Image (tube, rainbow, N blue to C red; front, side, top):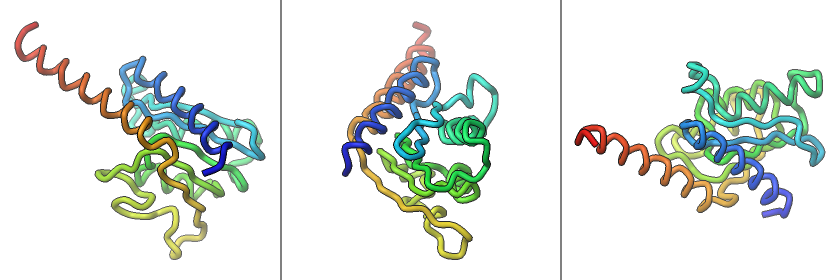
Length: 160
């Protein structure tokens, strides 16, 4: 694990915390090119009423606009949770060079957990993948968020 990976994942974690502050599932992403941040985002599906407003999608859209190209060759995406199939497809189509993620997603992860879209040799682009960077911190954010949500629902049922 490189120091750069840790530093960039810490930035992605800050984005995830912004999502949690807004009541969104705490996933954050940072897109870099040559070590410089060119895009960042956090989940906003609930607030934007947009199922595609995932952290990865937002960071990649921002990065593409910043560099003026929809092909993001030589970029690295740092994300706190393993991307879903939608976002994995986006990574392939946008030609992101490398993916670094924190927590694996055993329910919807499409970068090694339930499928591996980003490294499927049948597709026209494959990414280098590094997983488990600051995994415990990334996992804890999600666990705490969902524990809080469950407690809220339980309190509502009890009429508190």
